[in-house]
Image (cartoon, rainbow, N blue to C red):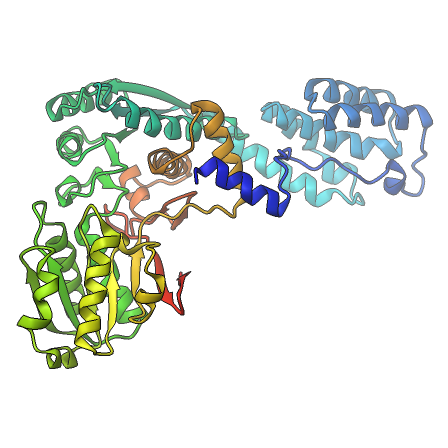
Amino acid sequence: MGMIALIRSIQSRIGLGVLLAGLFLPLLQPVSAQIRTGIPTIAEADSLFSIGLAHFRAGNNEAARTVFEQVLDGFTDNASTSTARIMAAKAAYRDKDYISARAFLSAYVSDFPTSSYLQDARELDSMALAASRQQSLPPVRLGILLSLSEEDRVPSQALFNGIRLAVDEHNLRDGARPVIMMFRNIEGDPNVAADAVSDLSRAGADIIIGTMYSEEAIAAAERADEEEVIFIAPLATDERVSSGRRYAFQANPSMTARGEAMARFAVNGLRLTRLGVFTVADERRIGERLSDGFIQTASELGAEINLIQLLPSESAWFDLPVNMPADTLDLVDAIYVPMATRDAPALAGAILGTFDRFRKNVRLLGNNAWHDLPQKAHASRYTMSYSNDFLPDLSSNDFLRFAWTYFDLNGSDVDRLGLSGFDVTRFALEAASREDSRALWDVLRNMPEYQGYGLRIHFDGGNVNRAFYYHRYRDGALTLLR
């Protein structure tokens, strides 16, 4: 089922209407609620105020502000005056005229000490002050590196659409520091990617996001460190992208980081102390890199690694019960079995069938290749638990609205590329917009965990994303543990 079709199904169940809320809820109290002793109500002022409120509710901010100012100029010491003052300030704020908004509020507390909107006035003044500071800053210059070669054009467009929607959302926020996008076509060539980083650095880029593949990202990251400009790779998983670097970041966790995260979860979360690792050798050494991270971190946390099996091929799973005594599994409470395969359901079936033949009660641990497989009941026999780096929140109204916006822009369902582009860009712009005296690379390293539409991002003091979802198969069902 496509994502848009799935969204329609969800909407039919929850009755979701795509309703866009305004920045402020309009003041719903009647003016009579603001009457204070000695302040008369005047029908003309009340009528004029109602016209202004109608404009405000309709989003006609300039017209609303004009009418509220007429109330303030023509009717002093009236029940409408205090409300018209704060509403004029809100209309000015909506129009990003923060200086005028603060001018309306400058004497509000002293002029209306008994108003029920004192707290509203204080909060709005604080927001306007922060927004005016952001507005006075130079724009964030966001560099984008993508390949427009024939084979890369479609995935690059999907990633770019996510980036663009994050920028559009950011620029629509009141008080947001504006963002300017600067695109460079890297033509699928690592050398071109490196030169594009230098070009963007000379053009004043604050942050550079992009490349589809690790080799391009490695070249871009090396040049970014030389140029001292932030580079964030949204997709690359090769450790060389960020290892030993200050300015290069990986939003997609490296294979080693994935193994490390699962080890921490096994030892600290599941309280497992006797562990084993079974993995298959593959050309890209994905299984080995996952296993190396798991073994090293589990050992550092005090767990015993009592069993390690590096199988020469996927077919070796079928011969394992013949070559290894079943009693060997008595040495462990759980075994990490990461998969690096093009056919996860088939390999998972082979692995689970192999452990059936051992007839031992052992828990299995895995990587994201185990996510949402058809063998839920079978995996439940071994309480298979695994880490996962990507999980769209289909129950979130915000996500559903985003998916529709993406569909309207691109004419297709949003996929992992689009969500990664959006989440990584939104996270980066939040970091760039913070009032912080530290260098931006230091801010990125120490940002609080970001919960996006598909990704969690937390660099946890380093340059590799270490935020994951954790799942478990149990009682024939897949559940999210955290």
